[in-house]
Length: 431
Image (cartoon, rainbow, N blue to C red; front, side):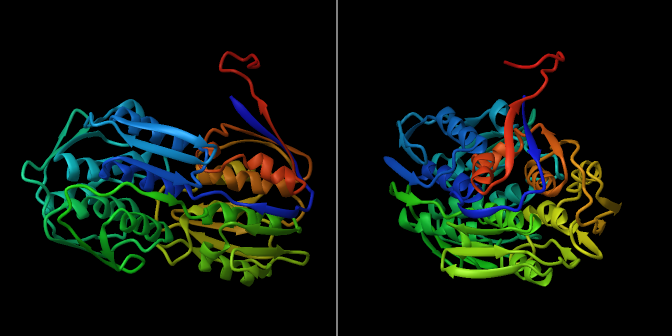
């Protein structure tokens, strides 16, 4: 099982370009189910979750080909298979997004209840309730969602209790093939929602209001047209590299996604004393040569502070002067990185959904740590980059789900990080 060996204490300097957004690419690839013919997608990151999605599409009867490292072609074979099996869906939460396109186009679907990172319940009830309101019959049988709409889906006014990104995307993909208009109220507003809407519009869908809490979608299509589309840059990867520059006291230019970086994150970085310069519309330079200030944050749906940046920001706050509070409001179990950070000497205490961080700038020491989920992995790497001595991070398959070749990108900035084989379950070393 791969591990990272990181020797910290080096300021990062240089330029790094982030790749395409994993969170945008997953639903965009899945939207190809709606089209007849062959669709081509550019700037698709080469990640474990992407490979799982391509396996899932292949399982559903679509041929997936890599035209180059980051370009994927999805081809309809004319022989759809309307079941998403447990063996694939259990590894990735986003797999449930095939439910809407399959149900809308083929009028039935059988999708395993999903799995993924253990950071909270993340129930699919919002998805199921929405499709019931659109006229689908939904049953749960032996761990599977069994859905059918013999007469097709019908447009509906859907009010989400919470602005769920996944549920918004699922309904957005199904609605163009429903009869009549669908209105999504309390919709998610993330940039990835806009990217999916742009792709669907290019496929012929009529969508308005994306990026706002109310989205209008006109139905009536039997299928959409194939598309050639380039995925947006990854704003979470961009934020992670901005913090990497700041936490090491370096100077880093981050390009490829600066125009989508979270404003809430950028404001908190400035508040903490990090210098940010806009080089151009797509590049931000981060500098941090002085004392960092403790800043409290509370995660919230977009445009609030992103939960996917909580672990990384916590690592930064361990190097700030003073005490900060980090409140997690999205997922109830997203502080699993805290015990691992304390192994480095971080002073963090937990009280329910609030983590109190007492900054200990310059005193962290390298230690062995274990990654528990995707974004937690990034937080551990950032803390290790500033710790004195060597850290070993195991179970890094988590970070491979969301960051493409992160060790290579950090190395080009001057980080001393190496991917190595860790002990096998039997106690030996894998060869």
